[in-house]
Length: 323
Image (cartoon, rainbow, N blue to C red; front, side):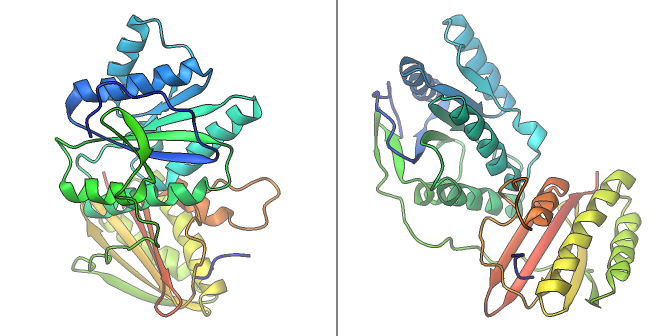
Protein backbone atom coordinates (compact mmCIF):
# COMPACT_ATOMS: atom_id res chain seq x y z
CA UNK A 1 0.00 0.00 0.00
CA UNK A 2 1.47 3.34 -1.00
CA UNK A 3 0.33 6.33 1.00
CA UNK A 4 -2.42 8.46 -0.39
CA UNK A 5 -1.59 11.97 -2.10
CA UNK A 6 18.07 8.92 36.94
CA UNK A 7 17.58 10.20 40.35
CA UNK A 8 16.74 13.80 41.14
CA UNK A 9 16.16 15.40 44.47
CA UNK A 10 14.62 18.60 43.09
CA UNK A 11 14.64 19.46 39.40
CA UNK A 12 16.47 22.68 38.68
CA UNK A 13 14.26 25.30 37.05
CA UNK A 14 15.05 25.68 33.38
CA UNK A 15 13.37 27.83 30.77
CA UNK A 16 11.90 25.86 27.86
CA UNK A 17 13.95 25.86 24.69
CA UNK A 18 12.42 26.91 21.37
CA UNK A 19 10.44 24.19 19.64
CA UNK A 20 9.72 20.80 21.12
CA UNK A 21 11.70 19.63 24.15
CA UNK A 22 11.41 15.85 24.63
CA UNK A 23 12.93 14.86 27.96
CA UNK A 24 13.59 11.48 29.60
CA UNK A 25 13.25 11.14 33.37
CA UNK A 26 14.56 7.80 34.67
CA UNK A 27 13.59 7.58 38.34
CA UNK A 28 13.69 5.00 41.12
CA UNK A 29 10.38 4.44 42.90
CA UNK A 30 7.47 6.59 44.00
CA UNK A 31 9.39 9.21 46.01
CA UNK A 32 11.67 10.12 43.13
CA UNK A 33 8.72 10.15 40.76
CA UNK A 34 6.98 12.74 42.93
CA UNK A 35 10.14 14.82 43.45
CA UNK A 36 10.91 15.19 39.79
CA UNK A 37 7.36 15.54 38.48
CA UNK A 38 6.12 17.95 41.18
CA UNK A 39 9.23 20.12 40.69
CA UNK A 40 8.53 20.15 36.95
CA UNK A 41 4.94 21.26 37.62
CA UNK A 42 6.09 23.92 40.11
CA UNK A 43 8.46 25.35 37.49
CA UNK A 44 5.66 25.45 34.95
CA UNK A 45 3.26 27.21 37.31
CA UNK A 46 5.96 29.74 38.20
CA UNK A 47 6.26 30.53 34.52
CA UNK A 48 2.46 30.67 34.05
CA UNK A 49 2.55 27.58 31.86
CA UNK A 50 -0.30 25.08 31.74
CA UNK A 51 0.42 21.39 32.23
CA UNK A 52 -1.23 18.26 30.87
CA UNK A 53 -0.50 15.01 32.69
CA UNK A 54 -1.01 11.65 30.99
CA UNK A 55 -0.18 8.84 33.44
CA UNK A 56 -1.74 5.67 34.81
CA UNK A 57 -4.79 6.00 37.08
CA UNK A 58 -2.70 5.12 40.17
CA UNK A 59 -0.13 7.83 39.37
CA UNK A 60 -2.93 10.30 38.61
CA UNK A 61 -4.50 9.76 42.05
CA UNK A 62 -1.09 10.17 43.68
CA UNK A 63 -0.39 13.44 41.88
CA UNK A 64 -3.90 14.84 42.40
CA UNK A 65 -3.67 14.22 46.14
CA UNK A 66 -0.28 15.95 46.41
CA UNK A 67 -1.26 18.89 44.21
CA UNK A 68 -4.58 19.48 45.99
CA UNK A 69 -2.97 19.15 49.43
CA UNK A 70 -0.43 21.80 48.45
CA UNK A 71 -2.97 24.08 46.75
CA UNK A 72 -1.09 23.68 43.48
CA UNK A 73 -3.69 22.01 41.27
CA UNK A 74 -4.48 25.14 39.24
CA UNK A 75 -3.30 25.02 35.66
CA UNK A 76 -2.85 21.25 35.73
CA UNK A 77 -5.09 18.99 33.63
CA UNK A 78 -5.16 15.20 33.35
CA UNK A 79 -5.63 13.19 30.18
CA UNK A 80 -7.71 10.05 30.51
CA UNK A 81 -5.28 7.64 28.85
CA UNK A 82 -7.61 4.69 29.43
CA UNK A 83 -10.10 6.29 27.04
CA UNK A 84 -7.45 6.11 24.32
CA UNK A 85 -7.02 2.37 24.81
CA UNK A 86 -3.72 0.56 24.46
CA UNK A 87 -3.02 1.71 20.91
CA UNK A 88 -0.02 4.14 20.96
CA UNK A 89 -1.14 5.36 17.53
CA UNK A 90 -3.87 7.42 19.23
CA UNK A 91 -1.53 9.34 21.54
CA UNK A 92 0.03 11.86 19.13
CA UNK A 93 -3.35 13.17 17.89
CA UNK A 94 -4.49 13.61 21.52
CA UNK A 95 -1.36 15.64 22.37
CA UNK A 96 -1.63 17.66 19.16
CA UNK A 97 -5.22 18.61 19.86
CA UNK A 98 -4.41 19.79 23.39
CA UNK A 99 -1.21 21.63 22.43
CA UNK A 100 -2.83 23.40 19.48
CA UNK A 101 -5.79 24.60 21.56
CA UNK A 102 -3.64 25.91 24.41
CA UNK A 103 -1.20 27.60 22.02
CA UNK A 104 -4.14 29.27 20.24
CA UNK A 105 -5.30 30.56 23.63
CA UNK A 106 -1.87 32.09 24.16
CA UNK A 107 -0.65 29.62 26.79
CA UNK A 108 2.87 28.22 27.09
CA UNK A 109 2.54 24.50 27.72
CA UNK A 110 4.23 21.51 29.28
CA UNK A 111 3.29 17.84 29.37
CA UNK A 112 4.06 14.78 31.46
CA UNK A 113 3.62 11.38 29.86
CA UNK A 114 4.21 8.00 31.48
CA UNK A 115 2.77 5.03 29.66
CA UNK A 116 2.04 1.72 31.31
CA UNK A 117 4.30 -1.10 30.09
CA UNK A 118 2.71 -3.66 32.38
CA UNK A 119 1.01 -6.53 30.61
CA UNK A 120 1.80 -5.32 27.10
CA UNK A 121 2.37 -7.84 24.37
CA UNK A 122 5.61 -7.75 22.37
CA UNK A 123 3.74 -6.06 19.51
CA UNK A 124 2.25 -3.38 21.79
CA UNK A 125 5.62 -2.68 23.41
CA UNK A 126 7.30 -2.26 20.03
CA UNK A 127 4.68 0.24 18.88
CA UNK A 128 5.02 2.17 22.16
CA UNK A 129 8.78 2.45 21.60
CA UNK A 130 8.12 3.63 18.05
CA UNK A 131 5.64 6.20 19.38
CA UNK A 132 8.39 7.75 21.54
CA UNK A 133 10.63 8.08 18.48
CA UNK A 134 7.82 9.52 16.36
CA UNK A 135 7.12 12.31 18.88
CA UNK A 136 10.31 14.09 17.78
CA UNK A 137 9.11 14.04 14.19
CA UNK A 138 5.46 14.85 14.90
CA UNK A 139 6.26 18.00 16.88
CA UNK A 140 9.34 19.19 14.97
CA UNK A 141 7.41 22.21 13.69
CA UNK A 142 4.86 22.58 16.50
CA UNK A 143 4.49 25.51 18.89
CA UNK A 144 7.17 25.39 21.59
CA UNK A 145 6.38 22.97 24.40
CA UNK A 146 8.12 20.66 26.84
CA UNK A 147 7.29 16.98 27.42
CA UNK A 148 8.72 15.10 30.42
CA UNK A 149 8.60 11.30 30.11
CA UNK A 150 9.10 9.46 33.42
CA UNK A 151 10.38 5.86 33.37
CA UNK A 152 10.62 3.80 36.58
CA UNK A 153 14.02 2.11 36.38
CA UNK A 154 13.15 -0.23 39.26
CA UNK A 155 10.31 -1.82 37.30
CA UNK A 156 11.25 -1.63 33.64
CA UNK A 157 13.52 -3.90 31.67
CA UNK A 158 16.96 -2.49 30.82
CA UNK A 159 16.15 -2.85 27.11
CA UNK A 160 13.11 -0.57 27.53
CA UNK A 161 15.21 2.06 29.29
CA UNK A 162 17.95 1.87 26.64
CA UNK A 163 15.43 2.26 23.84
CA UNK A 164 13.86 5.23 25.64
CA UNK A 165 17.24 6.88 25.96
CA UNK A 166 17.78 6.65 22.24
CA UNK A 167 14.53 8.52 21.56
CA UNK A 168 14.82 11.46 23.98
CA UNK A 169 17.18 14.33 23.03
CA UNK A 170 17.06 15.72 26.59
CA UNK A 171 17.14 14.14 30.06
CA UNK A 172 16.43 15.08 33.66
CA UNK A 173 19.16 13.52 35.82
CA UNK A 174 20.36 14.32 39.36
CA UNK A 175 18.10 17.37 39.38
CA UNK A 176 19.55 18.83 36.19
CA UNK A 177 17.81 19.31 32.82
CA UNK A 178 20.20 18.89 29.91
CA UNK A 179 21.23 16.99 26.78
CA UNK A 180 20.79 13.23 26.89
CA UNK A 181 24.07 11.44 26.00
CA UNK A 182 22.12 8.32 25.08
CA UNK A 183 20.08 10.01 22.35
CA UNK A 184 20.73 8.78 18.82
CA UNK A 185 19.52 10.78 15.84
CA UNK A 186 18.93 8.11 13.23
CA UNK A 187 16.08 6.30 11.47
CA UNK A 188 14.03 4.05 13.72
CA UNK A 189 15.23 0.43 13.74
CA UNK A 190 12.18 -1.82 13.86
CA UNK A 191 12.25 -5.25 15.40
CA UNK A 192 11.09 -7.85 12.88
CA UNK A 193 7.41 -8.64 12.94
CA UNK A 194 6.72 -11.96 14.62
CA UNK A 195 5.73 -14.91 12.48
CA UNK A 196 1.99 -15.57 12.16
CA UNK A 197 0.57 -18.06 14.63
CA UNK A 198 -0.70 -21.35 13.27
CA UNK A 199 -3.15 -21.91 11.85
CA UNK A 200 -3.06 -18.76 9.69
CA UNK A 201 -5.62 -18.33 6.94
CA UNK A 202 -4.72 -16.61 3.67
CA UNK A 203 -6.62 -14.86 0.90
CA UNK A 204 -5.22 -13.23 -2.24
CA UNK A 205 -7.38 -10.38 -3.56
CA UNK A 206 -7.47 -7.95 -6.45
CA UNK A 207 -9.28 -4.77 -7.44
CA UNK A 208 -13.04 -5.34 -7.19
CA UNK A 209 -12.76 -8.12 -4.60
CA UNK A 210 -13.28 -6.17 -1.39
CA UNK A 211 -16.45 -8.17 -0.68
CA UNK A 212 -14.32 -11.31 -0.51
CA UNK A 213 -11.99 -9.60 1.97
CA UNK A 214 -14.92 -8.60 4.19
CA UNK A 215 -16.37 -12.11 4.01
CA UNK A 216 -13.04 -13.65 5.02
CA UNK A 217 -12.61 -11.25 7.96
CA UNK A 218 -16.19 -11.87 9.06
CA UNK A 219 -15.75 -15.64 8.94
CA UNK A 220 -12.54 -15.53 11.00
CA UNK A 221 -13.95 -13.09 13.57
CA UNK A 222 -17.20 -15.03 13.95
CA UNK A 223 -15.35 -18.32 14.34
CA UNK A 224 -13.48 -16.88 17.32
CA UNK A 225 -16.53 -15.18 18.92
CA UNK A 226 -15.76 -11.52 18.28
CA UNK A 227 -18.35 -9.03 19.55
CA UNK A 228 -20.57 -7.85 16.64
CA UNK A 229 -19.83 -4.17 17.28
CA UNK A 230 -16.09 -4.78 17.25
CA UNK A 231 -16.50 -6.82 14.08
CA UNK A 232 -18.18 -3.91 12.32
CA UNK A 233 -15.32 -1.63 13.36
CA UNK A 234 -12.78 -4.16 12.12
CA UNK A 235 -14.58 -4.49 8.80
CA UNK A 236 -14.38 -0.73 8.23
CA UNK A 237 -10.64 -0.76 9.01
CA UNK A 238 -9.97 -3.87 6.91
CA UNK A 239 -11.86 -2.44 3.95
CA UNK A 240 -9.81 0.77 4.14
CA UNK A 241 -6.49 -1.07 4.20
CA UNK A 242 -7.47 -3.54 1.46
CA UNK A 243 -8.76 -0.68 -0.68
CA UNK A 244 -5.41 1.11 -0.31
CA UNK A 245 -3.67 -2.08 -1.43
CA UNK A 246 -5.67 -2.22 -4.64
CA UNK A 247 -5.31 1.52 -5.28
CA UNK A 248 -1.67 2.07 -4.39
CA UNK A 249 -0.10 -1.39 -4.05
CA UNK A 250 -0.21 -2.72 -7.58
CA UNK A 251 -3.89 -3.59 -7.77
CA UNK A 252 -3.62 -6.63 -5.54
CA UNK A 253 -2.82 -7.75 -2.02
CA UNK A 254 -2.75 -10.66 0.40
CA UNK A 255 -4.76 -11.04 3.60
CA UNK A 256 -3.63 -13.40 6.35
CA UNK A 257 -5.45 -13.80 9.68
CA UNK A 258 -4.74 -15.62 12.94
CA UNK A 259 -5.33 -15.36 16.70
CA UNK A 260 -2.47 -14.15 18.91
CA UNK A 261 -2.46 -12.99 22.57
CA UNK A 262 -6.25 -12.93 22.68
CA UNK A 263 -6.59 -10.78 19.57
CA UNK A 264 -7.55 -11.41 15.99
CA UNK A 265 -4.73 -10.24 13.72
CA UNK A 266 -5.52 -9.34 10.11
CA UNK A 267 -2.36 -8.80 8.07
CA UNK A 268 -2.41 -7.11 4.68
CA UNK A 269 0.59 -7.14 2.38
CA UNK A 270 1.16 -5.51 -1.01
CA UNK A 271 3.96 -4.16 -3.20
CA UNK A 272 3.39 -0.47 -2.45
CA UNK A 273 5.59 1.82 -0.36
CA UNK A 274 4.48 4.21 2.43
CA UNK A 275 6.99 7.01 2.84
CA UNK A 276 5.28 8.95 5.64
CA UNK A 277 6.16 7.41 9.05
CA UNK A 278 3.34 9.39 10.66
CA UNK A 279 0.59 8.04 8.43
CA UNK A 280 -2.56 7.55 10.50
CA UNK A 281 -1.01 9.12 13.61
CA UNK A 282 -1.88 12.75 12.87
CA UNK A 283 -5.46 13.99 13.06
CA UNK A 284 -6.50 15.10 9.55
CA UNK A 285 -7.51 18.71 9.04
CA UNK A 286 -10.87 19.74 7.61
CA UNK A 287 -9.37 20.84 4.29
CA UNK A 288 -6.92 17.94 4.00
CA UNK A 289 -6.89 16.01 0.74
CA UNK A 290 -6.66 12.31 1.65
CA UNK A 291 -5.04 10.64 4.63
CA UNK A 292 -8.21 10.24 6.69
CA UNK A 293 -8.55 6.50 6.17
CA UNK A 294 -5.49 5.34 8.06
CA UNK A 295 -6.25 7.75 10.90
CA UNK A 296 -9.67 6.10 11.19
CA UNK A 297 -8.03 2.67 11.16
CA UNK A 298 -6.00 3.65 14.24
CA UNK A 299 -9.18 4.80 16.01
CA UNK A 300 -11.02 1.55 15.28
CA UNK A 301 -8.35 -1.06 16.04
CA UNK A 302 -6.64 -1.93 19.32
CA UNK A 303 -3.25 -1.87 17.63
CA UNK A 304 -1.98 -1.05 14.14
CA UNK A 305 1.47 -2.04 12.91
CA UNK A 306 2.83 -0.66 9.64
CA UNK A 307 6.10 -1.76 8.06
CA UNK A 308 7.04 -0.47 4.62
CA UNK A 309 10.13 -0.40 2.42
CA UNK A 310 10.66 0.32 -1.25
CA UNK A 311 12.15 -3.14 -1.73
CA UNK A 312 9.83 -5.28 0.38
CA UNK A 313 6.50 -3.49 0.00
CA UNK A 314 4.03 -2.75 2.78
CA UNK A 315 2.66 -4.89 5.59
CA UNK A 316 -0.18 -3.63 7.79
CA UNK A 317 -1.35 -5.63 10.81
CA UNK A 318 -4.70 -4.84 12.45
CA UNK A 319 -5.14 -6.18 16.00
CA UNK A 320 -8.64 -6.43 17.51
CA UNK A 321 -9.28 -7.93 20.96
CA UNK A 322 -11.62 -10.89 21.09
CA UNK A 323 -12.84 -10.34 24.66
